[in-house]
Amino acid sequence: MMRTLSKTQRTFFCILGIGSTFFSATLFLTLVSMFRPPFTANLATGANESKSYELHFPSDLEDLKSLASLLKQYRQENFGYVVLLFCSAYLYKQTFAIPGSVFMNLLAGAIFGMWAGFPLVCILTGCGATFCYLLSKAFGKVLLLQYFPDKIQALQDKVKENLDSLFFFLLFLRLFPMSPNWFLNMSSPVLEVPITHFFFSVVIGLMPYNFICCQTGCILSQLTSLDELFTFNVVIKLCGIAVMALLPGLIVKKLHKTKKSHLD
Image (cartoon, rainbow, N blue to C red; front, side):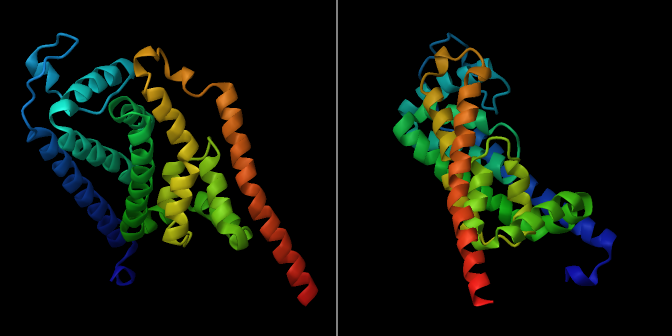
């Protein structure tokens, strides 16, 4: 169907598809936050009841601390609802590449603790990124090729160069702290990255980042600035892990070239 449409019509169709999906997801998340179970506990902060019921995405560290305090108390009475709300909000952000994953990871550590929060965000990261992948596959290809042709071409060349060790290359990109994960999620369908490679590279590759965030979230009340989260030493360690993940891919690539030269 898409091939029979003009360029303008294809663009309009893609924007309409993304917009409709975004509207539906926003409506669902709004309904989840509106139709919530009653909350009878008093906030430790002494805030009034109407204030305590405000549920929203945190915009800064103090806002995050207040939300974490509310949800930790809410969890005592309505654990299932808090899990549903958190998962819905996390997937919403990941699916539509909305900035602020660091806040959600910190929140997971603060609400659920390390042993429950860490595996939860790892799974949600993989699922949310995969939803973004599928959304881009359905509606994003035309827009990405139209507005980011150079970046897509550069990534396409890199994928072709590392085709024999694609998973390790994808793992390196995810582990490297400066990689634009949002763009990798959207462009992977255009690059024809297999969805299984994509999912597991996201889950495994973002584990160190998620671990650091969740661990810090457990002591959220002591955090005074987000700069304390990713210090220079932490960034260097993440870069080192990324390089180590790339080494198996380089070895596989070298062995493949050697085998090919012998056959020739």
